[in-house]
Length: 316
Image 1 (cartoon, rainbow, N blue to C red):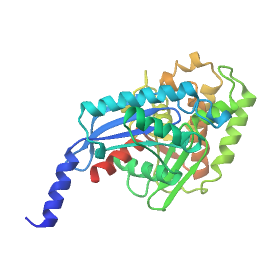
Image 2: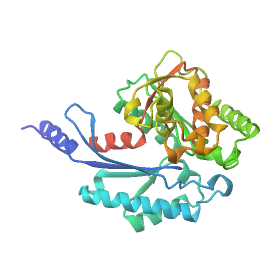
Image 3: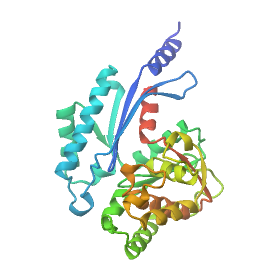
Image 4: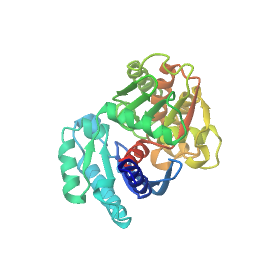
């Protein structure tokens, strides 16, 4: 066997061995354990979503909240136990932090603490790298290189398109906008109007009409909650709306419909209970971005950053 064929065989064998990908964001902590299939797709072995909301209070103070940090460390400990159960070696684990750790003045100190207490080495992603990994992730949902992907997070929002060489980020998301503009539990039309205006202003950093004439995908939690509501599901089920196409205007309509209701009334919609307080702001962000991009429709997907991480880990 030639050296080239030997290397190819070794890569194929490694692709079948599991990898772990961790995405620690402003709102959620996500773990994906996956391995590669023969057709190049991902086989999910285990997936966990926790909501430590590490970025709680960050918009006001610039530092991580002590209680939020504890919740995030506990989430990472749980992930480390899962990784140990699958006997995944450290070289096949990739753990990243996003906008929350980029922005916090003590973000690097938190990453050092996480390494010490959980054994997980957290990489703090740059804005461009976060956008690029969203681009890689959408390939797992079956999108081609001409697709434009929008990823609304808790602390930032990214767009990316391989065909356009486009990777950009803006510093707003569901948690940041909620904490900045909305009083807890009190629907207020004036505050809501200010939040929508702030989202539209930030979205101007993205190229106007970049989504015209190309498929636009929205990935992550905000996207699949939009899909569940648009599809009229009886209860939230992200698997039931994978790849569903939604009129772009529906994001703004649903955002306002939820925002001007109490949290309890929002739960009559097929949404995640853990996201009920921040979902209106996430949808407002998505609506502003879609309008800026000139998108008439958007496909929604639960694939996200962790899938991009896993795809690249399998190829290493």
